[in-house]
Image (cartoon, rainbow over the protein chains, first blue to last red):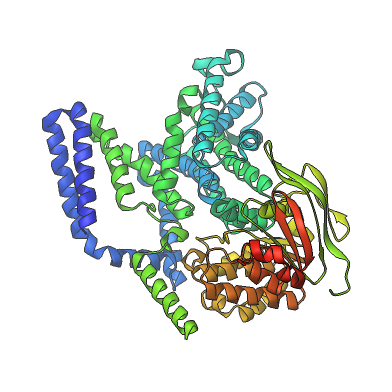
Length: 392
Length: 240
């Protein structure tokens, strides 16, 4: 309790001081007041947290699958009829949200499952988009032929990044991946003869099938839903497979994983390649929808946002990452009314989420099982009593 | 012991970390069915020897044969598949995974699901505490329990040779005794063991044969009971 008050006090004060230069003292004070209101709401919520967590964990592992499935069913229906019950704007936002779900789930393979911090993930998104753009405009191939090729190209780049970084971990890996991401963007920006430089590539053809050429937002919406479902299915299967277990072992302890007979080199490269291929698919889709690609779409900021989706949602948890992506796309959109302040509020929201739910919205199962002080006490007593018995 | 020839034979291996040569020509043999122990002070090269056998470190010179097959130069995962399993120094269980998941991870190289389940049962029988805690995260176990888990995790891959790196490290004396009894039992049930230890007295008590390492070389070797009586060994490693 005391600790939470401290956290709120420090957090609010910090944000208040940070916002003074942007908003001026008066507005910053309003901001502070709103933070205090939020804090009060939090402390009203706090006593019920356990109940809510209980409900949440019950929802996650419902004894009655019928409720869970009907919940999924309702969500599925809502997702499917969305273009008919809303306008084009919302359909477009939803399309972009699902694109980011695909991206975040791909990054989750690398960061969440295998524990390799990748800050240049957007590079693979760019590779996918440019592969699509070039193959479609220059080679004249159709969407369905190019999309898998985009994925393969991205996977190849994933391996290219993976090889030199096999021995790196943590901070060092982060720096190298960050550099890789920038390298790709700068190359795209300067290789005028192929990529068109800062002007990008124009007039990319969209997909067409059975005489229907995709032109309306809801065409793309349904297309990305199919891609999204494929991604969720594939990532889920990977997570529960032998490969998934190998990744977990590498994340937990690389040397022990090696001692278990896990081929570290192969598994790490596989994580990079598979993670990248989903970004490649998302990139291909993005290029076909926008009909235009330029290096501006693939800045470091994109990598950061995708990483935030993974971390905020809950590393390693598939529903968590999906939720993280949805929130991080919808939150800034819904804050458009606040105009210039929206990024500040967005940032503040992220800080608050990390302060109070460090494990993410739906923390990975692993994180939820982490030790609490009470458990440690019990454990200590247990071992002590064990020791006493033996001594006698 | 067991009338067998050498299961593992290391012939004059050299291993370097950068420019520093950690092993300067180590040769040793482990016979089938025996417990061999490798003693020596800190930095003598005991752990490096084990890691070189496992393929984590590559020898610059020399040869390692296992079942008369040359294994030096193979990557670690292939060496595990050959039937050599390592219990690493400091236990290195997967802290955020449950005891059961740790054991399943140990069986990573095996693909016979039925056989794994059977072996799990027999491991639970031999380590009842692990059965009791099978859904608990490994990081919450006590040091001794973690050591048991690390050993069990190595056993479940059905190794022909078990390498143990400092199993007594950081454990309460009573736990050390327990772990050594377990090691002896494992050996009785047919596994060959190469044990690296600082606790020389205890190691020699359960071992058949002993090697003493000093600065990257084998300084002495003999039957364990003879080493126990050796004057020099007594002075240096057994505390007078």
